[in-house]
Length: 306
View 1 (spheres, rainbow, N blue to C red):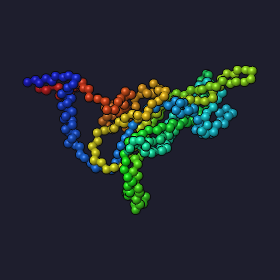
View 2 (cartoon, helix red, strand yellow):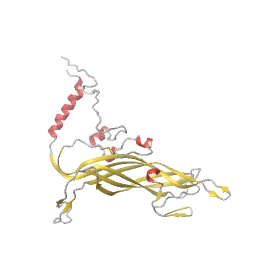
View 3 (tube, one colour):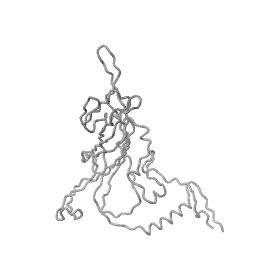
View 4 (cartoon, one colour):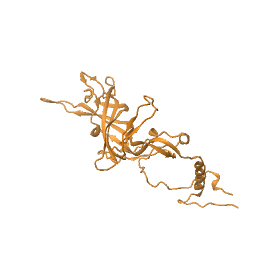
């Protein structure tokens, strides 16, 4: 006797049966465990395209000499007068500074977080024929960001542990406020010279470069967490929603169309890695959207039931 399954877009019996068998096997292996954990109370991801409007012109990361001019660390870089182009490379997030964390005055349980991102990179100036001018220049830029996340409320607790063994007889106070955890990855998008016209009595001189504007793409995840006791069952990585505060004045279409590189923050585990499955989030992904569309594609024997 042959049993034939009928399929449509809303019903996939072969996948459903296969998934039920897998779930039943997994359920026999799952058990609850009590752990001391850093429980995430709220998180968000941000994808900012940073131009001179947000980070200003490039500044010297150390004392340098360009031509006959000495530029001190932190000053705006004045390019060589014969520079026709500039390139950027070796970009990294040098430092993330948590500037401030305070309760939001209007929303109970929410916290305002002020962050400072420090980028370091290398600029190479070139003449019109592409010849490099002197050695590359080490530069940096700073981006300030403020976001609001839910961190709950509580009270100070006194805790003691011999985990670190600095002094097992000491205790410490665990503040009621949540802790902050920030992850970031940056990419260099472009660099360009900006020119100013030289005015001299009786003559009009050709314009000379007076600063460098860079464009940086920043991927970042921000979390608020507390130290708590939990009974847990793992179901894989969590994907933060987008930060609601992201509203660039001048969107960079190319950067914002990129998938969020979740693989950099949560590398695939062995089964996903061997199967070539990525955790990267499509640019049009919306957290919580219905993703239950089903189309039956069987390459197993479950569809042929004799």
